[in-house]
Image (cartoon, rainbow, N blue to C red; front, side):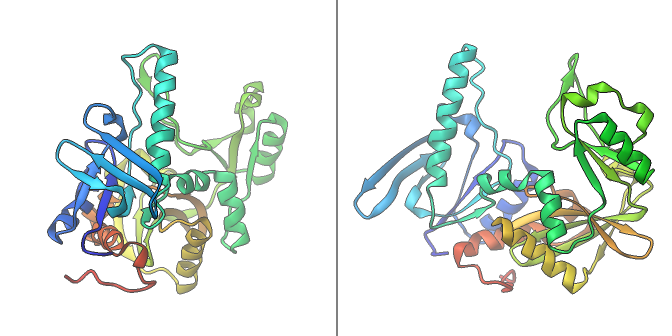
Length: 328
């Protein structure tokens, strides 16, 4: 990426993981503009010109402390931005205003072609459908546990009778409250006699339980792979981080290449994979999180994940396949 190129970092205000990446960029003297779409109209202003001269899109983004010309954006780190809700407006006005920001600011950023997206939000969204993930994993030769997605309670009961030990997962994590109390759905065992006709209301994901001895979180950044084994007695390790132990492992070469190819197929420079390890040391597909958390893993293992993100952003679209230029 040319010297004058700037890295845009789109994320929420208190994002420690983004801070870790930005600290490397600052240390390397790379210009960074951090912003959150939720600040639109207060601490975030932009203008964009189209079809003027030889540049498809020109203009600038301004925050209270930074200004960057759109033509000088070399990479966009789309971390965890929050779109404005316009809570001070009436419902209809708020929905209208929010849509204009998404399609105005978002559409302008999506028009930036001569830069690296890590990752492009539209590709993240397309990659976030679990049924499509399962089918792609199977096509690429990964071991996928038998899975049923259905709203038919009879089909679900038959699947549970067939596979005996079955778990239920949500198809997508969604912010959810009941009576003001936040609720989270974990992967949980399910029995046929627990199901009733409310299953018909929405699709459910049922999956044969893997007889696992450990979990594996694999982060890929460009062509760099970081694999961490997570040991616990939990079916879903996310339920209690204090019960986990971590160890850095090396992936078999074939599995590493397959996971990289998986991301290439989806057009994603980065992604976090969850795999289960059985007693024979075999790896079983669970899911891909195209924009998963990883900051705590660097803290626990010392793996240079943040530096890998910063390095890829610096090299931008000119990043070379396996090149490792982290030594600076």
